[in-house]
Each structure stands twice: as C-alpha cells, then as structure tokens.
Length: 517
Image (cartoon, rainbow, N blue to C red):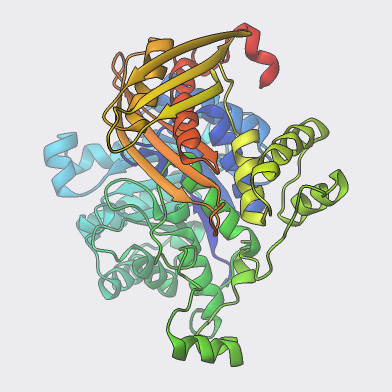
C-alpha cells in the first residue's frame, strides 16, 4: 500500500470560519505562500460563492501562488461549481471540491431531500465539475453519522461519475478512534471502485479527538488528511496539521507513512497564522506551544542537560524552533541583518529589506539586543501591514493613582498631523478615545490582549485588539508591537481602524496609497 499521506490544508477556508477571524486578501496570500513553503499538497483557498471577497481571495491565490494544488469549495449545484471554477481556473493545479450532506439528520432538517435526490445531486455535481477539470473532490458532509450502506452507495456513484478524491468527514466531531478506524475500513470493503480514488478524512475536534481520529483513519487506509494550522476552525476546530505530521514522523515505527511537509517550516507557519488571525496559541499546545519544549522541573532539567532524549521525543530544531538565539545590536550592519533574515527563512526583496532595516534601527535604539523573535515580529509587522491611512505621530500619556488618565495623541493623515486629547478610565481607554475623536470611525472594542514577544525588561510587547464596526458589524483584528506597551496599544487600535477603512474600500487601498502595497 502507498506510504504517502497527502496534506490538504483548509486554514483559509474552514480555519477562517473561526468566530472573530477575518483575513484580508493580502493576509490570505501570505499564508498561502507560507503553506507552499511548508510543503502542503492541497490548499483549500476558500468558498468562492460565499461572498465577492472570498471569490477574489481564491482567484488571486490561484493566480499567484505556485507549488500546491489550489482547491475551491462548492455545494452540489451548478452555480457554486461555476463560481469555483472561475476562481481556480488560473491555478497551476486547480481542484473543485464539491459536497452535499448524507446523514438522515441533515437530509431531514437541513436539505429536506430524499436519499434518491441527494444521490442524484451528488452524481450530477461531480459530472458537471468534470466538464471543467479532471481533479474533482467529493465530500459527504456528516458522513460518520450517515447510514453506512447509503454512504457507500453515494461514494461508489461519485467515483464512477469521475471523483478522484472522496472525503469522509466527521463533521461534528462525534466519532471515537476505534469507531472511525472501523468506519473507514468498511468503506474500503464495501465500495467496489474505491481503489480508483484517494480516500480523505476531515475530522472536527468537538470531543478533542480530531487528530487521533485522523491517525486512526490513516491506519485504516485513508491517504489524504484535511486539517488546519494550529487546529483552528468552526467550534472546537479541526485536526491540527502540525500534530498529525509530527505524529507520523515521530512514530514511523507504528504508522509507516510519510508526508511531503518540510517540518522546519512548521513553527514559522504556526506563528504567522496565529498573528494574522489574532488567535493565540495556548502555552501547552502540542508541537508549537510556548511550553512544548520547556522544562521547569529540576529532575527534567537535569535529564535534558545530560541527554535531550530523556524528556524530549523531538528536537525543537526539527520544526524550526532554534536552540540558538540570533543576537543583533545597534552596530550591526545591513549584511549581517540580511543574513539573519535569510537564516530565519525570510526571502525579501530590496525594498522590503530597506523598510525592515529602518524599523530595526529604530527598535535597536530602544532595545539593547535584538533576537530572532524580535526580527520575526518586526518583519511580520512591516511586510504584512495594510496601507496606513492613519499613522501614529506621537503619544503623551498622564496617569496615576491620584490623577485622571489623560492621553494626547497625534496621527498623520495625507501628510497632515491631527491632534486630540481625551480622558478615560485608564491610559489605554484615554488613548482609544483620543483616536476615536480624530478618525470619527464608529467601532466598539471587543477584546484586548497583551503578549511579551521576548524575554527581559526591554522585551517587545505585542498588543492584539478586536474591534467591531458599528456600521457593518464586521470584526477586525489590529496588532501593534513596541517595547512601550502604551505605544503598542495605540498602534494596535490604529491598525484595526485602518483595516476597517481598507475593507470599506473593497479590500483596496485608496488611490493615493496604492504605491504602498
């Protein structure tokens, strides 16, 4: 049996459906490019019929991102499939992924269709998609809760109609590992033409079993796994790509399967997705969590110092977590700076290097040493930023236990400096009220989080905020990085405001800012 497992990443589709996550086109493309560096086989770029924005993101990703199959999701109807094809037709390797539910619960309460109607729709959708391209995937939504004989009937029919991949999801995360293993094994036994298609699984994490169920399916014969970076997604999320890949790697003796993933890119990909979605990684998260390779117990520390394998089953460098810290200072030149970026895996053009180097010089005047973590923060803030309609010019704050917190702030817009002052319940509240006075953009702060990106008293602090537009009810994530947490707070809020403006312009910068893209 083939020992290759194909990795189907749905971070940009199912992952973006996580509550509070909204990625713009530039961010989606940045993630897609990183997924190709990671070695993902298939990238599900979105659901084109869902919105004009989703269509545009899939279309641009298909045209610009090379090195992986680009898939678009479509319900089992012609309008969805037409839209999906229009979105992916320029891809180097396009795929249409069509689906319809097969469980009695969905047939009766959602679709209000008979089994015969669902079977007919599934066959028609695959045949119609095959008119456009040869790579067609079919998913039986809520497959695990479906009648097994009916599911097998549907799978046999869609394979005969031309489906090259058939996906068997545990849509609501209801299965347990042994059950799911037997369920997939029985598909291989009961579907006579199953050898003509790749069998895929897509497991949700409602009971915390998505990864183990996916691994059980691989043992039963599945050769494609649908997953997301950091396990993000609807409700409790999806199977985490990094956990599946490293389980297959670390337990070759048990699974005997390989992927095409470049494991040294895992940590960088995880951090990028976390930053752009605003979804923090829990410290004890397997593989990529802050504590995944940390040892506080004296017994553990002693063991690891003597022989790392006593308490670590993986070398952190294997997933791109360096054991050595890259240290740069204010006397570092451009060459050393460029080499440090290259060592971290960043491939920047000259204009981007100049921009990041200028920011580096500003930060290094305020922070004695710059580590690789600092560099990642600087690069990701500078290169992945959206056009800035408003930019922080200066910030003065007065606060204390016996005074009313007051903030005076200056923002630059179109070369003009706009100034305002405001009082608040605290210094951050005062800053945000002053910004609101200047911008006049109605929005509501719904979350505020601080994270120390590096160690030490002069650590870079990152503030992440989520704001809801009062006019559209859309939630936007803003980020700001600075050794001064109040400055980082101001930058994060301004970043969120700029995102609302960017979105209101259809995801495009105003004409005067197009050169900044």
